[in-house]
Image (cartoon, rainbow, N blue to C red; front, side, top):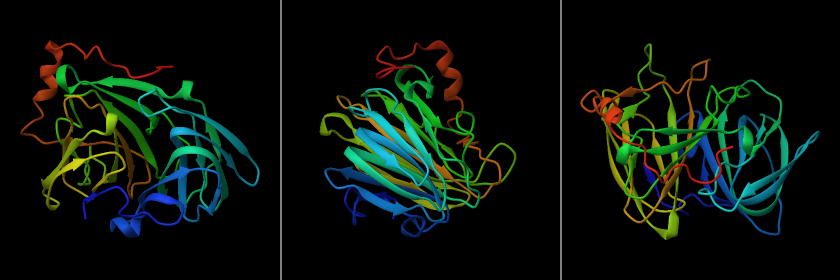
Amino acid sequence: MTHVPYGKTAGGPWSVEITPSVAGWTYSGLRVADLTDAPISFDTGEEEMIVLPLAGSCTVTLPDDTFVLTGRASVFDGPSDFAYIPISTQVTIEGAGRIAFPSARATRAHPARYVAAAEVAVEIRGAGQASRQVNNFCSPDAYQGCDKLMAVEVLTPSGNWSSYPPHKHDTPHEGEAVLEEIYYFEVADQGIGYQRVYSSERGHIDTLAEVSSGDVVLVPYGYHGPSMAAPGYDLYYLNVLAGPAEQRSMAFCDDPRHAWIRSSWDAQHLDPRLPFGRTS
């Protein structure tokens, strides 16, 4: 199972529930809740977790802390504030909106923390039709208060490609980390996008999925990319990554057939539609 349509893993308070056991791997997870009037409560157990509003806002109550997340109207309105929740913590979430919970199985407890939207680093990558925006809210350089968990948001203007050139994180050597990766998608105006995942030396995989809001693509290994925003529809995805290494790293290896594309960006302009939303 690589492409997971919206609702396929729904259960209890979760409209999306990707656990390591559901994905068939060891570390990475993601849940999404559509909050209304009823709060949800749970224990993080062996997973460290981030509370990230996709649309709307919420209050996060822990035994010794309370964090009020202002959130945002949609994922295309700039970065959101967020909260980090450690392993073995009882948490209650209440509010209104769609809230994501990227997670990773971990062994070390880090302090709970609130991070304001203004502290989220926004990066513009690529050029031309490969221009895209990355909200580095929980990349290894941007946020050090995690054991295993890494997560970023990528926004791609309509007609552009991202996660490109195709790359992988599946072979342990210098310059490449071994990671399990989740793509969670939102598409503007109820549109569509596309995601490619294909084989590497780690094994056979062959996915070209049409994705819409709420869909998930799992990447246990293999080259992944491009992520394609169909003309007329801006594309968002939340990447959640974790792996066995002691040191958090998102290091990757490009498909050598397509690595030359990076050098072509020097002669191209950035897409003027970027950035989306606020940048500070």
